[in-house]
Image (cartoon, rainbow, N blue to C red):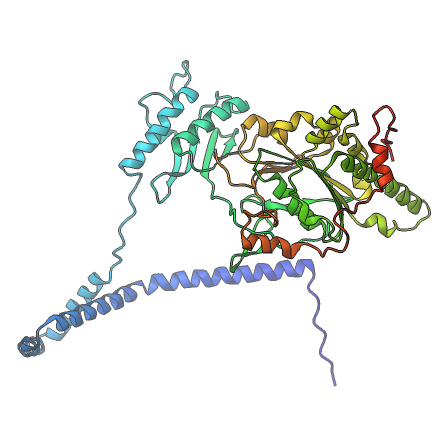
Length: 537
C-alpha cells in the first residue's frame, strides 16, 4: 500500500510565490467583479427604477380615499384595455415603462463641486497673502508670491475638513527660499499654524528637492489609555503611543470596553541597546513622574528597581516595600547611600561577568537580572548637597551610566526645565534616549532632543503629551499611558484600580533598602572626609 507523502514545509521562496498567487487571484476576482458591474449596470438601473415606480404606486394608492378607489380602478382598467386593443400597444407600453424606470433608477447623487467654494477660497487666499512676506523676492522677475496674486498657482493640493478648515495643503515655494535654515522654517510654520487654526496640531514635511511643503492636520492622540500589561518582550519598554504613520508596530490594548491596536513608542534596553539610558524633561505637571511610574511598573516584571525621588512629594510611596523594589529614597542621605550601592553593584556585575567569560562560563544569574535606577529631579539633591557640603548624587551615577549597558543596569532621569542647569555633564552625555513632555518653546525642545520636531504643538497639552527621540532616530509624538499615584485623592477609582493591579505584592518593610545604616552614617560626613567613588569598573 503506497503511503501519501508528507506535506512539505513552505520555504521562503515558495511562501512568496503563494502570496503572489493569492494576490493575483484577488486582483482577478476584483477585475471580474468590476467588469460584471459595468455589464449589468443598465439592468441594475432599470430594476432600481421599477422598484421606485412600484413604491410610488403603493404610496399613491394608500393616499387615495376609499370612496375614490373604485373610479381609480375603472380608469386603470380602461387604459389597460385601450393599450391592448391599439396596434403595437403592448410593445409601446413596455418601452414607455422601461424608459420611465431607467429615468427613475438613475444615480441621483449630486456631483462633487469642482474646486473650493467661496469661503474655502477666501481661507486659501488669506493663507497665500500671509505667506507673501516670507516667500516673495524683490528681484524675482516672475514672482510666485505677490500681493494680490493667484493662490491656485502656489497651492497644488488642498483638502478641507467637516468644519470648513484646511485639513491638508501642499505649498510650492521659490527655490531661493532658505528651507535649510531652521529659523526660516519656524517662521513659516508659525504663520501657517496661526492662520489655519491654533487649536490643532500640524505636521510639516519639507521637500527641499522639489520645493514643496506639505501641511497635514494631525489627529489628537488618545489621552485616556490607562496603565496595563503590554505585549512586549524582556528588554522592551513602552514609553507611550504615537501616530500610526510613524511606526509599523501596533500593540493590542484594552481601551475602555473595547480592544484596539495602538502604535507604541518602544524603548529597547539591555546589553544590545544603543540607547541604554533615558532622560525625560518637562514642565511641572507635564507628566514626568507619570512616565517614571509607568517605566517602573514595566521594569518590575523582569528586574529590580531603585527609586530616588528628589521632589519629596511621595509620588512613589505605593512602590515602597514591593517585590523587586530595592528602595524608595526621598532624603539626601538615603539617596547618596542608595546610589553608592548602585555604583558598587555595577562594578561587581562587571567583575563577575568578566571572570565568567575568562573561565568560559555564562554570566552569573544575579548579573543577568536587569537593575533599574530611576532618579526624579536630581537637581534638588544637588542643591541640598552643595548647601550641606556633601557630594552631588549625580556623581555617583557616573559608573552606572558609563558601564550600565555591559552590566545590565539602566538609568532613567527625570528633571524639570527650571532645574536643567543642575544636570551634570555625565547625565547629559550618556542619556541619548530623550523625552520632552508638556508645552515648551521650540528652542528648549530642540536643546533636549537635538533637533526640532516636525510638528507644531498646542499651547495647552494634556498631561503625558510630548515628544520622544531614541538616539539619532526620528522625533515621535508621544502620549504616556495614564499611570497616576494610586494614593492621591484626586485619582479616579478606575485609574487607581488599574495601577494597583500592576503592583507586585508587598513582602518587605517599606523602609528597607539595599544599604546598611553604617553606610548612611558614613555618607553624612563632609566632602573632605568622604572617599571618592571609583569611576571605572
